[in-house]
Image (tube, rainbow, N blue to C red):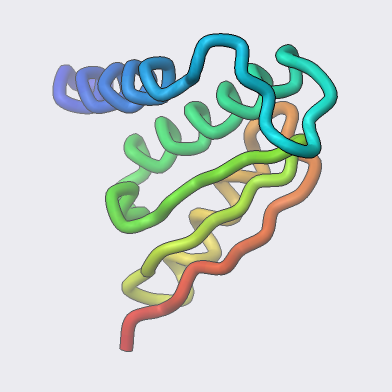
Length: 105
């Protein structure tokens, strides 16, 4: 991995960790452990998107709740939308993916 990608992955990971409130559990989650698992999944999906040249990670939002990943934002084409979904499905712990990415026309 080149130094720029390493810095980007580190920045995405750090941002995710900084946004985690101290032991807060959101509605629908039964434990702090599940909350941390979801945050880890979100971070891994975003990091893999940053590494992938076919996906504009800055244009796609990733949220995870109970192992379900929700993708939203904008893609340049159908290939980018599909690739983003495949990346999310490839992350360990993902139970399902809801792909709500809109294709810019």
